[in-house]
Length: 234
Image 1: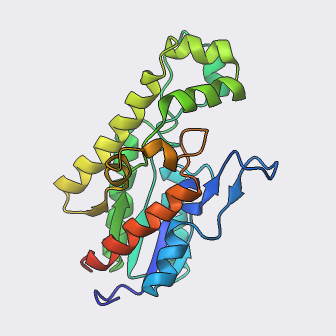
Image 2 (image 1 turned 90 degrees about the vertical axis):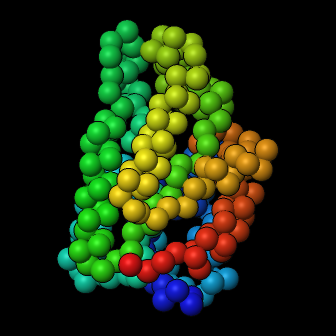
């Protein structure tokens, strides 16, 4: 690309891996070879090193980043994408004692602290960091998915039968990402805003309410293709 960004590494979770659920394959999930970033890589002609991992949380992401640096893998840009799994709960434990207080998998302060450490590692190694906000959560679909996947009564008791509790947590972590970027001069792609402003964001999401579907990845590719050439190499 004209901005000097020709190799991009990605440290994310199943969203940027291209995982989709609820397909006709019979699998728990499938991986789209033609996902948002792979489509953009072909269009913009950059080398893509996608190190995203299913179920990833930010503390695993930083370990992956450090291993890559130790191996000498240096890219022009590192896309850091996390939050969906970090703000979620260990539902097996939650459902055992739903009336008790439970922290998310990665408490908010630890989440932002680790994001900051990843940004620092990138900058120390002359890699431009770029954060991505979390795609919107379809709260009722996600609530339904949790009830089917775990002890339904436990899920209902913990959330007081209010799916909005899940959305609120998701939104808090997303706001924290934006706040961090603005306060620390870190570039970001606001994927959540781009999807929401279409006015029909549910059409872009799998029935589990949290993973973008094929149409979602096609749309995300358009966002990447528009935004990545505008990123300033640090």
